[in-house]
Length: 347
Length: 284
Image 1: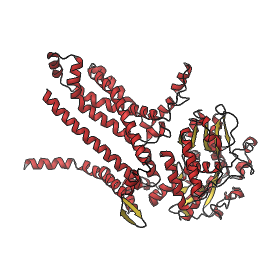
Image 2: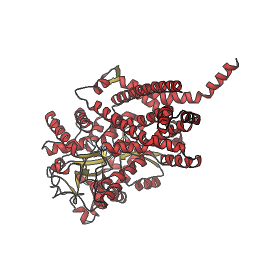
Image 3: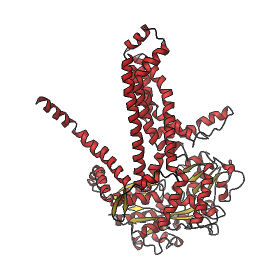
Image 4: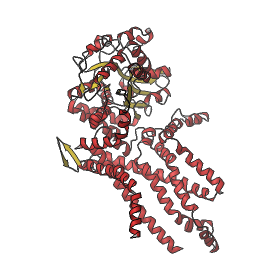
């Protein structure tokens, strides 16, 4: 019923759009990606080289992307999505992703082996790594006393009204759990209650729970501290040299974002060509240079200047990330996380 | 017969709008109400009040609190708009027509720019490192925390909705028959008495529509609070998030609650407006 109503409405709304699209003879590829997470020039190049049209949309969080796909169903019409690890395994379990044939991809062999066959997709049947990185604290050295080494600064009253947290349920609750010494994937009610209490206590210190806009704010010197992904930190540091990034001593979250083809896609072959194209060395390098996240592509990494390779942020040594955890899909339990997060930001 | 024909022709002219209203206004509203009362389980649907119970749950009053926050922030914004807007509308109506056109043009001008952009512009003004705080810094004050506060939301609301307060009031004052004022003068009323007993009562319809046009968008806004209010989320943000996370039932229930609330307020104000004009007529 819900689907039907939705479909009827969407059909009405999309009538004009679809008729406009189908009149063209070019095949269309619909890509759905994180906001500010691609060099859009790359899309133009793909359009030109393959004689196709790319429709590009963005989302702010894995959860927003998932909800949108579920609620729109087939009508969304996306071909390629770029979710993170835990979301990929959730989508595989729910049959939302199509198997892809990596052997047909010319550039798949250029992906570093340590990023293949990871827990979220053990046989690499559904995904090709896009970028990876860590979660940490971006801080402004002129506004912070002493080095930042631990999540504890985020709960320090000295920084009241001078810090940003992330508006992302897994990341922010994960930070609290990690600080308390629990797993970032905890499904223990008592541990989560403790994390909730901690985040509630922290709320008066927080300016805002942010998304991509945090980059502009940190570059502008609006706050002393912010929880961000390493790649975004580099983008900010490139603009404002007062900024520094730290992965806390408690460890952190290690994430892998990978390109997947949706089961509902009607252009699976073109989608695979797009994924292959994104792994091509020149394209992968262009893209990396633009978004500053850590690339899993060997030729791209080898060609990097030493100062990037050794800055400890983009390509952390394995001992630096030894304590880090990868998010796993929590199944039904994620509802508990969502409820907690709602109570934090609206409570 | 002729009248019937005329009536038919008129309703025929209204047909495009009627169809439009059915598809784009009535149908979505009905859907919202349906969603707010239905709970999907397995393949079936059942009627439920659980979303409303969740909202009014007194043991976890976070939703009620954010509704309360939204209402008083919107009310404050409306009052500030009225205090700023009424005198402006009055002054505007007393200007020479040539100047008046120019000035009212200036009021409308910012509205040519997108609402979102205008609110973004306030961000760069209000930030700790923004224009205002930099100026304050030069005279040795601050920085003052403007951004991420409820005050910033009021600010943003006032800025964005002020024209909607000024224009309806101006419209009623400018149409006011000058003979009433002359009569008041002849009967010995000074300016303040004239204003209190003639101008203000007669401009009330404008005030009521100005208040409605300011309060309603202010109470449901989520962009202003998102951009300027920081962690101070309002009911609009809550609704937006519920829809974004796929919780259409609860999001719809909150929308219904807000709609009913606004409807009640408009009903009360509409009655007040009628009474005023009735008694105003008697006074005359």
